[in-house]
Amino acid sequence: MKQNHKIAISILLVMLTLASAISTAIAADASWSKASDWAVPELQKALDAGIYPAKLLNMDMTKDITRAEFAAVAVRLYEVLSGTTAAEAPQDTFTDTKDADVLKAYAADLVGGIGDGLFDPNGLLNREQAAAMLSRVYKKVKWEGWTLESDASYTANSLDIADAPTFGDSGAVADWASKSVLFMSKYGIVNGVGDGFAPQGSAAREQALAIAVRLFDAYPTIQDGGPVQPAEPEIPVAEFVMEVGRNPTSAPGVPVIVILQDIIIGEKVFNRGKTFPLEKESTEEFGMVIYAWKLYKLSPEWYRVIDYINGSEY
Image (cartoon, rainbow, N blue to C red; front, side, top):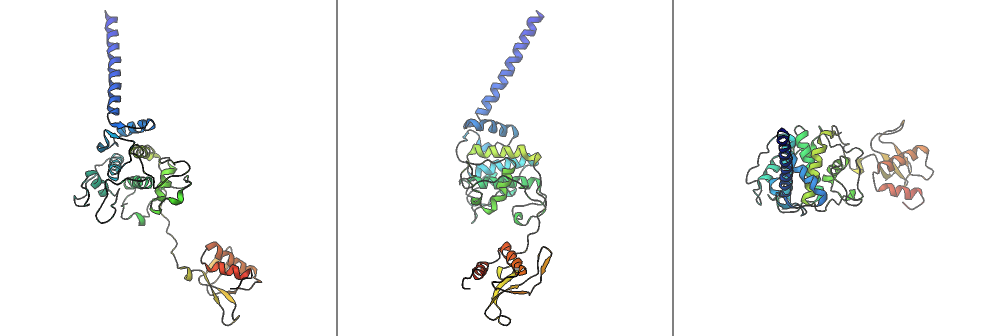
């Protein structure tokens, strides 16, 4: 009798386990109407992590994602990583939407508008925009004092892009998104399309959730790129290191190089104001200056110097 009782309990436990598994599968399947086979595990991870937004429930995940939908993804990821609840921006922030997720994303510095008080909620998001938005999620959570408005001038931290894999079409990535794409590439958050990244290509809903999940997974291992080093001040070419002119006294009619600020090449110092006549019998010292000029790529005049030295008319 006791043995039968144990068998009955075992059967009941198995049935409960199966029922739970079936229930979970049904719940997952009910969360989207259609998804690619490769995306199902990623979507399930998004559900489990709490970053699957309500507005994408029961949707076809193979369709392209809109700006408003991706804002919702970014907000959920931000809230999970930060452990906070995002507040909404004022209802009149945009004239074309009062979507709660968009207003939260804007207030949290995750998204911006497109100008003239518009957000374009139904516009499709492209791949470089997705990379930039998710990078902002990381910055907002990790970098103290960072805001979208201060992004260009923020120097306390930087994205870790050292030795990041590049794509065949990296040159097509917009300047404002280039570091975000490299950052995402380094940590395996974004993948290429063939040998490129297709920065202006659209992103499917399932792809958007997948990169959000990958950022969530990679977050504990991400290193900071360190403080931003101050950039060298930009000096107009005509006022930089040297210029080409004609020496009216020592060698009338002969072009000269005039050094406009001190430069150092190895142990050799060339002081401001020093001149070098552009004669074909150039000295080693003059050759070093010419080399420096080429190295710095300072002016179209460089090509005129080469023409002169090679015998072309100046």
